[in-house]
Image 1 (spheres, rainbow, N blue to C red):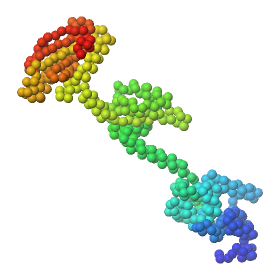
Image 2: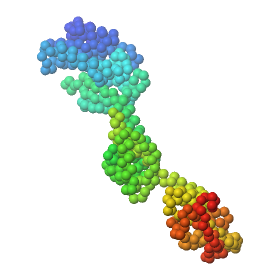
Image 3: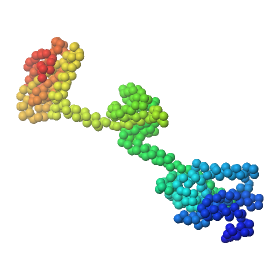
Length: 453
């Protein structure tokens, strides 16, 4: 300690190879050589030591006693060359670290991880290249304690400013309990980390979706189940995964599955298919489903993903709108549009079926205004409903509608006895009060729209 290499060389304490190696290190090179001391042989390596701005301030080296290696003397030169070649050309990062974290040696793969030349990396403290220096400190502490470090996640800063995610494994070489250097393996897992992040993001997106998303095999076995599926169907993921998809399909809708799976096996998509599904409590729910095949690396379908949206409220709104369009707002009876549609359907059916008959009855309530004026509109509505009920009891099933003013009409769809073919039953009745009504007259006319419109 404290003596210069030239002084030790003058006393033959060090060889000329050592002097030359250190001179080259001070010039910026990384040098490996052998030291012979008596019957002992040491594998030595020396690197330039740089300050924080990259200026060479000295040299740092390490020597490893290789005298006891179980190797024939004739094989040592080639074996050493093989090891050097392996170190330099390994596809993973390899490096040696000193006790304080100084980088003593690094191969090409290690340098590629940080995008630096050898003289910009070797000789500096490893903490400078870690995004989280505390991780490097913890690794060095464990190595100095004699621990073996395996697959510790760390982040290195690349020269271009990007972050490289790596897994570090290392152990220390000790001699008589003294720390000589650490041997480190650095594996770049940046792409894997990005893929994991993308998968995690996708899973979070699926879990937070408002629509039910269910994955299944082409045999119909449920494989994935998100939170929205639990809210829609009532089954938890544990209850649903592994069960057949028929768990969610009502018995009278299961025949549709055959066509769906045939389309999926051909790689086809099914968009916005409206159907009915079954909840855990046995109730049915109106849904719109979109199904996409899951393809393997060769583009072959191996499964399917179903996105299901509850359209119960939409169906209810549609029914309410349709009801409002076809029914009178006061009496809730079918209106003129509904009546004309019903008669049109009956006429069309009669054209297809010569034996089909139907009747049309118009009736007017006399003195109906007196009911509204004396008893109120509520009583008037009751009057209409009782008149409708009385006609229905006398003539059988019918479609009743309220016309303008106090005119009403009923279309009877049944096989009337005694009516000639291609005829329509028309009648007129008058009513003084809701509970008293009788026919005023009736006649048969040809069953053509022009006869009654």
